[in-house]
Image 1: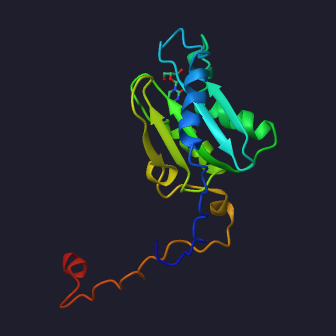
Image 2: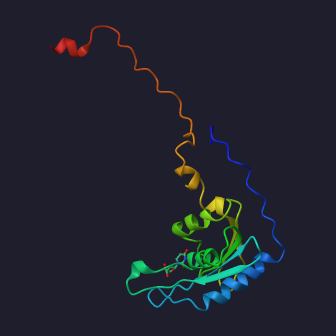
Image 3: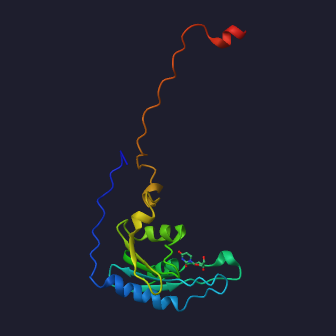
Length: 172
Ligand code: THU
């Protein structure tokens, strides 16, 4: 985007084994999923910058709208325990489905766009995305700052000058 300079994204330093371990944690959390209505069990795990891992599963409700996704359960558990920066995430879904938009937004509050998100089906290989890939041009706290310059747009072009008599005048 022209006109707004973001600080370069911080490099995520990952211990080599972090993602496979995180996928395992997500897979076991999936075993606790409470999904009697959809039958779609999800497990998630997030790694905080202090090395701690938090897991979550989806928790459905008979009032369907009160359902909470596995990813948000994991992020909220991390934040409730004092974590503020997440450096990796893993999700295990029945079919390798990626995190929903709401969960992407909640992850974005606590992670850089470079956050790696490994997504796997229970028996399959993981695909690794970045948060920035899944949620480009994310809306964030900096957008709350009224002093942030808006994206630069070209100045409005002057209205074309009319040649000849004003057609409206002719009708008068
Ligand atoms: N679900 C998640 O846990 N994470 C997602 O990112 C997408 C959907 C859950 C919510 C609901 O319990 C079930 O999957 C079907 O939507």
